[in-house]
Length: 423
Image 1 (cartoon, rainbow, N blue to C red):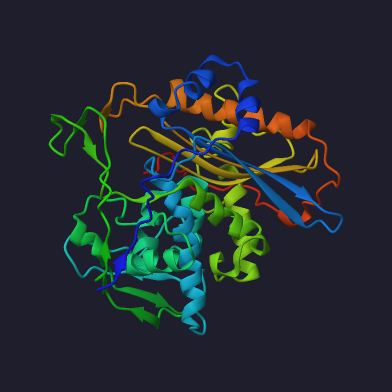
Image 2: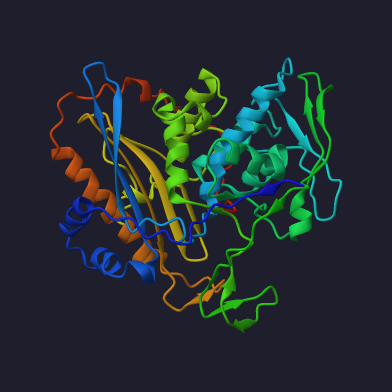
């Protein structure tokens, strides 16, 4: 039985660079400074990456850290949808099955307790689910069902084995985003891919993960929590068996997609050029630009999942800016892992951050400080770094043409808008 190793160094200390501290201190916004001055309370971690190009447009990366510590647990929430999307595309490419692509209709059967079927998808153009459509939904509005289906396609064992083999050892993916026991999450569904005429193209049998996880590093937070019976339990909530991934690994995974040559070959994912273009588009496209699914733009506005540019007074990004990113929010944790490209001003940088905003210390009570602290903090962080980058001198201006996407334009049709998504 293989051991799915979870890397934690007991002696590690939070990593902080004086340059970044000084830069962050230049913003005197009260909420922003309150978080920075209490990094342990808010469990805040920040990675800011400067990107400099040479005369051949080859990028180099300089990382700066604030309170970054792989031992300081944060719940990654929906950020794990990023590696799951990449692994789903990689698995399709590994299968080498003629006619099987990310757009192929895929059906989910049930073979174990609490598994559910999925045979249609009214939000897709074809009316069927597909890996491509799951990725679109996971990136555009952070759809939870899309993640669970990708989890079932790749399988719990492959998810962890493949990520660890790539060198992302601060990763542990243990569960779907639906209520299931640990044993139920080890089992994944039988799956069928169909040809255009509806006949069977490829069948994937149900799978069971026989590998063990290392849960020796206990993580318990808060002073109480609401249990499944809606009762208050006095005592910390146990995150030990929840998903885990370090901020460094999340940022490196995003970098491996956007700048594959900048990371060692081991850390890259097996993706085609079409896969990369697809990922670039839906990591940065706005929900309101998308035809399938047809999201209600009053609920799912341009910067809905762009936390570093999510201003409470303005639901649009500044003209010329696109953010290629993945966010997550759950249990009072908020995380954003981003690459920012300003095509108007020739500016690019990476910025990743996580913060814990739960002032009452109760988990699962749905009373988190997302609006009062989390969103203002992340927005001010994004503004601080962005305006620094706007004025930073570069020896060579970046050519960002490879990240310019011909985005969709919303069609005016009679289909109803999607007003609510489980995310």
